Image (cartoon, rainbow, N blue to C red; front, side):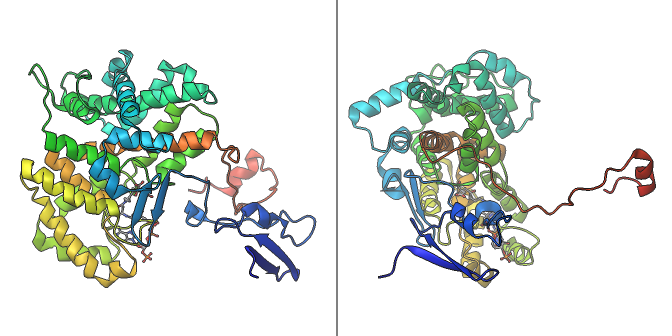
Length: 436
Ligand code: SDX
């Protein structure tokens, strides 16, 4: 009877080892027994960028990349996007179950009453140049919140953890809106507790001199759906950062700031801003074929395409495309959509992309909607960071209470020189100037 094990023969010693297979993995530490002699450290795995390495056990988000499936706590993303609000999904991600009516009401109240920021934040935000990038202001300001809540370091106290989680979820839209208003030179707008999470975000962004901000319900629902789609995505680059920084028992504010910093990269959450720059560079539908050729020649990347896990259409991109149509019914059609649709049409037929299984990802269409909603591209990644804060915190919390987890500390393959003779200064001059 086949057993869940792997038998390996080390051809260097002709010794055979049998390693248990658990959940489709072998434990890297089980390889350390494979040695050529007592002095040998033993085998390690080598996996740059962790392309085939499970770093944790998690019950939060399931992705089947081949089939284009995404589920939060077992619920298909399509169902949640259709029936839930973002805060309802935030509750699901953090606590594992959809809230009942009372639970949701209390949860919404809790988050609503944590949207205010300490007044010192205005001085901190005021120190940035007028044109500072919103993501850099967000990363810095989230880290600075650790100075306002020093008790957040007590990460093993579940009540304290939950309080900081509520604060971060409540305050992220306020910080993002402040960075947006800072760029425009507009006065900051305080949260309005009569409004929903997403309507209040729109209020803090766009309220001008009128007595009360009233959000367009179609647009606020579209933003809520976009927040749901961006809430979590298992062990992506920024979540891996959150878990790694959190594994040193740093507080959740600096860990969230680090995760947001990782998200800001153009290959990750910064891609939605890059997509708009790419569409602007292409300029018209007629130029798409020429741009595709540049991508195939390796001179450009097709931003918003490709994914480490999805080797099929990103299910979020499908929902975003549907949401775009709802938004354009209100705002008018974004002309960039025609260029994006032509890019997708050509790419999905072209062997270069088909062979590499490159499909539109979550970032390909989101920027077009954000632009139609009135956001500048520099704001797009901050719009990703707001909902992903929930995913980062759910994953952080799962890591903190996971008995198997400890401080993250990978190994390396050393390629440098060993045990060199020290060079006194006079000999160094003879050795010539520092090598560049
Ligand atoms: C997000 O991990 C997550 O879950 C992330 C995310 C989340 O919700 O957290 O889903 C959000 O970050 C989505 C991805 C946004 N990034 C982009 O759209 C940037 C463009 N995409 C690529 O840079 C790339 O596809 C990545 C970074 C997303 C994935 O890169 P991988 O898995 O490291 O794949 P790779 O670079 O090894 O590419 C494999 C091949 C290469 O060609 P060959 O060397 O085999 O000839 O595909 C090519 C790549 O050159 N390729 C692309 C391409 N993406 C990959 N070629 C052109 N355009 C692209 N976009």
